[in-house]
Length: 192
Image 1: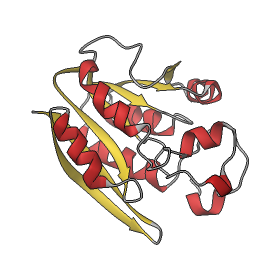
Image 2: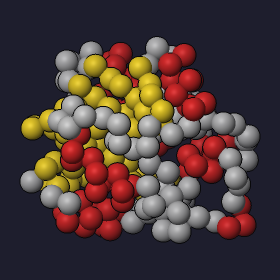
Image 3: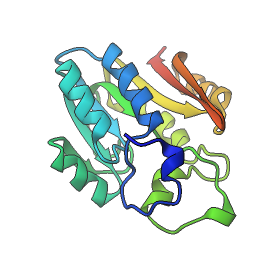
Image 4: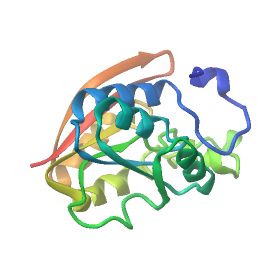
């Protein structure tokens, strides 16, 4: 796994695992149980989904809006579908939903019109994708289900926690890692 900073500017069609992926996978491995039905939204290469399935024995499905990503995830042996967030999934289908959303605030000077822009950029404030996810994810959670979502300090962790509360979740940070340019947090969202 390469460091994200080392890959900046590298052209690719699919987000590859970086430090944020490793953090989400590690937390999920500790939380997910064998037999859990897990959805990883925005799977990118499928690395997190594959690792969680292998390490926990969970039944993992992945989704991404990027057709290149779903193909790459399937090549890893992950059941992956092209989907916008949780739209195609049935109510109450998953015990756990994982998401490492595009969270970098928009930078007009560095904007690219490609799949990596879609994978990395979360709009003006970095929350253009995580907000609709938080607003819609409870529908696909089983009765005792929960969400593990990665949030960057660049996006505003407090703002995501506040929105989660407005959407009926209690939120707790399970793990944080600091880097020179940001702090990454994995939040556990549980329907209140």
